[in-house]
Image (cartoon, rainbow, N blue to C red; front, top):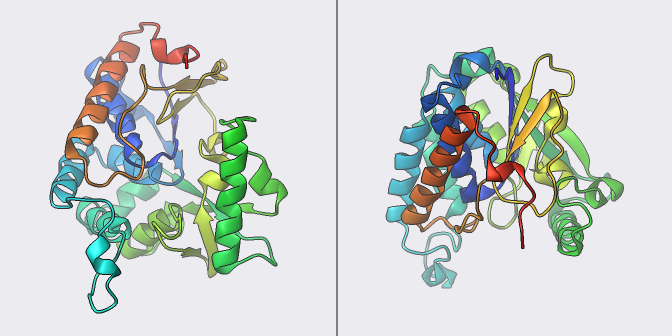
Length: 290
Protein backbone atom coordinates (compact mmCIF):
# COMPACT_ATOMS: atom_id res chain seq x y z
CA UNK A 1 0.00 0.00 0.00
CA UNK A 2 1.26 3.45 -0.91
CA UNK A 3 -1.13 6.37 -0.57
CA UNK A 4 -0.51 9.64 -2.35
CA UNK A 5 -3.62 11.40 -1.01
CA UNK A 6 -5.25 11.56 2.43
CA UNK A 7 -8.70 12.83 3.37
CA UNK A 8 -9.45 13.70 7.00
CA UNK A 9 -13.15 13.74 7.94
CA UNK A 10 -14.58 16.28 10.37
CA UNK A 11 -15.71 15.25 13.82
CA UNK A 12 -14.39 17.54 16.55
CA UNK A 13 -12.47 15.86 19.38
CA UNK A 14 -13.14 12.44 17.83
CA UNK A 15 -10.66 13.38 15.10
CA UNK A 16 -7.75 12.58 17.39
CA UNK A 17 -8.36 8.99 16.30
CA UNK A 18 -7.05 10.07 12.89
CA UNK A 19 -3.73 11.25 14.31
CA UNK A 20 -3.37 8.04 16.29
CA UNK A 21 -4.12 6.00 13.16
CA UNK A 22 -1.56 8.03 11.18
CA UNK A 23 1.13 7.30 13.76
CA UNK A 24 0.15 3.64 14.22
CA UNK A 25 0.31 3.03 10.47
CA UNK A 26 3.77 4.63 10.35
CA UNK A 27 4.97 2.44 13.21
CA UNK A 28 3.94 -0.62 11.19
CA UNK A 29 5.91 0.45 8.14
CA UNK A 30 3.29 2.35 6.13
CA UNK A 31 5.21 5.56 5.43
CA UNK A 32 2.37 8.04 5.06
CA UNK A 33 4.61 10.94 6.00
CA UNK A 34 6.70 10.70 2.84
CA UNK A 35 4.17 9.24 0.40
CA UNK A 36 1.22 11.63 0.91
CA UNK A 37 1.46 14.67 -1.37
CA UNK A 38 -2.14 15.90 -1.17
CA UNK A 39 -4.32 16.37 1.92
CA UNK A 40 -7.98 17.38 2.02
CA UNK A 41 -10.21 17.98 5.02
CA UNK A 42 -12.98 19.95 6.65
CA UNK A 43 -13.98 21.05 10.15
CA UNK A 44 -11.78 19.76 13.02
CA UNK A 45 -10.13 17.32 10.62
CA UNK A 46 -8.27 20.36 9.25
CA UNK A 47 -6.30 20.69 12.48
CA UNK A 48 -5.50 16.97 12.43
CA UNK A 49 -4.44 17.11 8.78
CA UNK A 50 -2.18 20.04 9.64
CA UNK A 51 -0.57 18.18 12.55
CA UNK A 52 -0.06 15.08 10.38
CA UNK A 53 1.59 17.02 7.54
CA UNK A 54 3.88 18.79 10.03
CA UNK A 55 4.70 15.44 11.71
CA UNK A 56 3.42 16.74 15.08
CA UNK A 57 0.75 14.20 15.99
CA UNK A 58 2.03 13.57 19.50
CA UNK A 59 2.68 17.26 20.08
CA UNK A 60 -0.86 18.15 18.97
CA UNK A 61 -2.29 15.57 21.38
CA UNK A 62 -0.26 16.81 24.35
CA UNK A 63 -0.98 20.43 23.41
CA UNK A 64 -4.74 19.97 23.38
CA UNK A 65 -4.69 17.72 26.44
CA UNK A 66 -3.00 20.60 28.25
CA UNK A 67 -5.65 23.05 27.05
CA UNK A 68 -8.49 20.74 28.08
CA UNK A 69 -6.90 20.00 31.47
CA UNK A 70 -7.04 23.74 32.19
CA UNK A 71 -10.67 23.92 31.03
CA UNK A 72 -12.88 22.32 33.72
CA UNK A 73 -16.15 22.47 31.77
CA UNK A 74 -17.54 22.97 28.26
CA UNK A 75 -20.01 25.68 29.26
CA UNK A 76 -18.84 28.52 31.52
CA UNK A 77 -22.16 29.44 33.09
CA UNK A 78 -20.57 32.10 35.30
CA UNK A 79 -19.86 34.11 32.14
CA UNK A 80 -23.60 34.34 31.45
CA UNK A 81 -23.59 37.19 33.97
CA UNK A 82 -23.63 40.38 31.85
CA UNK A 83 -21.28 42.06 34.32
CA UNK A 84 -18.58 39.45 33.81
CA UNK A 85 -16.11 39.21 30.96
CA UNK A 86 -15.45 35.99 29.11
CA UNK A 87 -17.22 33.67 26.72
CA UNK A 88 -19.98 31.26 27.67
CA UNK A 89 -18.41 28.68 25.33
CA UNK A 90 -14.59 28.41 25.42
CA UNK A 91 -14.21 26.37 22.22
CA UNK A 92 -13.30 29.15 19.77
CA UNK A 93 -10.62 30.66 22.02
CA UNK A 94 -9.08 27.26 22.80
CA UNK A 95 -9.07 26.19 19.15
CA UNK A 96 -7.43 29.41 17.96
CA UNK A 97 -4.79 29.40 20.70
CA UNK A 98 -3.97 25.74 20.08
CA UNK A 99 -3.50 26.39 16.36
CA UNK A 100 -1.16 29.31 17.11
CA UNK A 101 1.04 27.01 19.19
CA UNK A 102 0.84 24.08 16.77
CA UNK A 103 1.79 26.03 13.63
CA UNK A 104 5.14 27.78 13.67
CA UNK A 105 6.25 30.83 11.62
CA UNK A 106 8.17 28.65 9.13
CA UNK A 107 5.55 25.95 8.63
CA UNK A 108 3.52 27.52 5.84
CA UNK A 109 5.96 26.38 3.14
CA UNK A 110 5.64 22.76 4.33
CA UNK A 111 1.85 22.97 4.25
CA UNK A 112 1.95 24.46 0.76
CA UNK A 113 4.31 21.80 -0.55
CA UNK A 114 1.93 19.04 0.53
CA UNK A 115 -0.98 20.77 -1.25
CA UNK A 116 -3.42 21.14 1.66
CA UNK A 117 -7.06 21.84 0.71
CA UNK A 118 -10.01 22.54 3.04
CA UNK A 119 -13.74 22.43 2.29
CA UNK A 120 -16.18 25.10 3.51
CA UNK A 121 -19.85 25.96 2.90
CA UNK A 122 -21.07 29.26 1.52
CA UNK A 123 -24.52 30.65 2.27
CA UNK A 124 -27.38 30.82 -0.25
CA UNK A 125 -27.71 34.32 -1.66
CA UNK A 126 -30.82 35.21 0.37
CA UNK A 127 -30.08 33.26 3.52
CA UNK A 128 -27.13 34.65 5.48
CA UNK A 129 -26.16 35.53 9.01
CA UNK A 130 -27.69 33.95 12.10
CA UNK A 131 -30.86 32.88 10.29
CA UNK A 132 -28.85 31.12 7.59
CA UNK A 133 -26.62 29.39 10.14
CA UNK A 134 -29.60 28.12 12.14
CA UNK A 135 -31.33 26.95 8.96
CA UNK A 136 -28.19 25.16 7.77
CA UNK A 137 -27.65 23.14 10.91
CA UNK A 138 -31.35 22.37 11.31
CA UNK A 139 -31.46 20.96 7.78
CA UNK A 140 -28.28 18.98 8.37
CA UNK A 141 -29.49 17.71 11.75
CA UNK A 142 -32.85 16.55 10.44
CA UNK A 143 -31.28 14.68 7.54
CA UNK A 144 -28.76 13.08 9.86
CA UNK A 145 -31.48 12.09 12.34
CA UNK A 146 -33.44 10.43 9.55
CA UNK A 147 -30.21 8.61 8.57
CA UNK A 148 -30.86 9.04 4.85
CA UNK A 149 -27.16 8.82 4.02
CA UNK A 150 -24.84 9.80 6.91
CA UNK A 151 -21.78 9.57 4.69
CA UNK A 152 -23.07 11.85 1.91
CA UNK A 153 -25.48 14.57 3.17
CA UNK A 154 -27.54 16.14 0.39
CA UNK A 155 -30.17 18.42 1.90
CA UNK A 156 -27.94 21.47 2.68
CA UNK A 157 -26.73 21.53 -0.94
CA UNK A 158 -30.33 21.33 -2.17
CA UNK A 159 -31.17 24.28 0.09
CA UNK A 160 -28.52 26.36 -1.70
CA UNK A 161 -25.41 25.96 0.46
CA UNK A 162 -22.44 25.59 -1.89
CA UNK A 163 -18.89 24.27 -1.49
CA UNK A 164 -15.90 26.59 -1.30
CA UNK A 165 -12.32 25.34 -1.19
CA UNK A 166 -9.49 27.03 0.69
CA UNK A 167 -5.91 26.17 -0.23
CA UNK A 168 -2.69 26.52 1.73
CA UNK A 169 -1.11 27.82 -1.47
CA UNK A 170 -3.40 30.87 -1.32
CA UNK A 171 -2.25 31.81 2.19
CA UNK A 172 0.42 34.51 2.53
CA UNK A 173 0.96 34.28 6.28
CA UNK A 174 0.58 31.81 9.12
CA UNK A 175 -2.41 33.85 10.33
CA UNK A 176 -4.07 33.44 6.91
CA UNK A 177 -3.75 29.68 7.31
CA UNK A 178 -5.08 29.64 10.87
CA UNK A 179 -8.06 31.74 9.78
CA UNK A 180 -8.72 29.27 6.97
CA UNK A 181 -8.74 26.34 9.41
CA UNK A 182 -11.14 28.21 11.71
CA UNK A 183 -13.35 29.20 8.77
CA UNK A 184 -13.71 25.55 7.78
CA UNK A 185 -14.89 24.73 11.31
CA UNK A 186 -17.59 27.40 11.80
CA UNK A 187 -20.49 26.02 13.84
CA UNK A 188 -22.19 29.04 15.47
CA UNK A 189 -22.42 29.69 18.37
CA UNK A 190 -19.73 27.13 19.34
CA UNK A 191 -17.28 28.36 16.70
CA UNK A 192 -18.15 31.74 15.18
CA UNK A 193 -18.76 32.56 11.53
CA UNK A 194 -15.69 32.69 9.32
CA UNK A 195 -14.68 34.26 6.03
CA UNK A 196 -12.93 33.05 2.89
CA UNK A 197 -11.97 35.48 0.15
CA UNK A 198 -14.41 38.04 1.54
CA UNK A 199 -17.35 35.63 1.75
CA UNK A 200 -19.05 34.43 4.92
CA UNK A 201 -18.69 30.68 5.33
CA UNK A 202 -19.77 27.82 7.58
CA UNK A 203 -18.37 24.39 8.44
CA UNK A 204 -17.65 22.41 5.27
CA UNK A 205 -19.26 19.35 6.85
CA UNK A 206 -22.63 20.77 5.82
CA UNK A 207 -21.69 19.92 2.26
CA UNK A 208 -19.56 16.85 2.89
CA UNK A 209 -18.17 15.90 6.30
CA UNK A 210 -15.94 13.37 4.52
CA UNK A 211 -14.71 15.56 1.63
CA UNK A 212 -13.50 12.84 -0.72
CA UNK A 213 -14.39 15.14 -3.63
CA UNK A 214 -11.26 17.17 -2.90
CA UNK A 215 -9.09 14.32 -4.18
CA UNK A 216 -11.23 13.45 -7.20
CA UNK A 217 -8.77 14.91 -9.70
CA UNK A 218 -5.63 13.80 -7.89
CA UNK A 219 -3.56 10.89 -9.25
CA UNK A 220 -2.70 7.89 -7.12
CA UNK A 221 -4.45 6.12 -4.27
CA UNK A 222 -6.41 7.90 -1.55
CA UNK A 223 -6.75 7.02 2.14
CA UNK A 224 -9.93 8.32 3.81
CA UNK A 225 -9.74 8.63 7.60
CA UNK A 226 -13.10 8.81 9.34
CA UNK A 227 -13.74 9.91 12.93
CA UNK A 228 -16.65 7.64 13.91
CA UNK A 229 -18.15 4.27 13.02
CA UNK A 230 -20.94 3.93 10.48
CA UNK A 231 -23.55 1.19 10.39
CA UNK A 232 -23.17 0.64 6.68
CA UNK A 233 -20.53 -0.79 4.37
CA UNK A 234 -17.88 1.75 3.54
CA UNK A 235 -17.54 2.61 -0.18
CA UNK A 236 -13.90 1.58 -0.67
CA UNK A 237 -12.71 1.06 -4.24
CA UNK A 238 -9.43 0.06 -5.87
CA UNK A 239 -8.22 3.67 -5.69
CA UNK A 240 -9.93 4.86 -2.49
CA UNK A 241 -9.56 3.08 0.86
CA UNK A 242 -11.83 4.10 3.75
CA UNK A 243 -10.93 3.35 7.39
CA UNK A 244 -12.95 3.93 10.53
CA UNK A 245 -12.45 3.25 14.27
CA UNK A 246 -12.67 -0.40 15.29
CA UNK A 247 -15.21 0.58 17.95
CA UNK A 248 -17.35 3.58 18.80
CA UNK A 249 -15.38 6.54 20.13
CA UNK A 250 -16.69 7.62 23.51
CA UNK A 251 -15.70 11.28 23.56
CA UNK A 252 -18.22 13.81 22.24
CA UNK A 253 -17.06 15.91 19.32
CA UNK A 254 -17.64 19.16 21.26
CA UNK A 255 -16.00 17.94 24.47
CA UNK A 256 -13.13 20.34 25.17
CA UNK A 257 -12.79 19.36 28.84
CA UNK A 258 -11.77 15.70 28.64
CA UNK A 259 -8.01 15.07 28.29
CA UNK A 260 -8.44 11.41 29.22
CA UNK A 261 -10.96 10.96 26.43
CA UNK A 262 -8.54 12.52 23.95
CA UNK A 263 -5.80 10.10 25.00
CA UNK A 264 -8.13 7.08 24.75
CA UNK A 265 -9.25 8.18 21.28
CA UNK A 266 -5.66 8.63 20.12
CA UNK A 267 -4.64 5.25 21.58
CA UNK A 268 -7.47 3.51 19.73
CA UNK A 269 -6.18 5.12 16.53
CA UNK A 270 -2.67 3.87 17.25
CA UNK A 271 -3.91 0.28 17.62
CA UNK A 272 -6.11 0.48 14.51
CA UNK A 273 -3.32 2.08 12.46
CA UNK A 274 -0.82 -0.59 13.49
CA UNK A 275 -3.24 -3.32 12.48
CA UNK A 276 -3.90 -1.64 9.15
CA UNK A 277 -0.20 -1.05 8.49
CA UNK A 278 0.50 -4.73 9.09
CA UNK A 279 -1.97 -5.61 6.34
CA UNK A 280 -4.59 -7.11 8.65
CA UNK A 281 -8.28 -6.92 7.77
CA UNK A 282 -9.59 -4.39 10.21
CA UNK A 283 -12.91 -4.69 11.96
CA UNK A 284 -13.12 -1.01 11.08
CA UNK A 285 -13.46 -1.85 7.41
CA UNK A 286 -16.72 -3.72 8.00
CA UNK A 287 -20.15 -2.24 8.73
CA UNK A 288 -20.61 -1.36 12.39
CA UNK A 289 -23.33 -2.97 14.44
CA UNK A 290 -25.78 -0.82 16.38
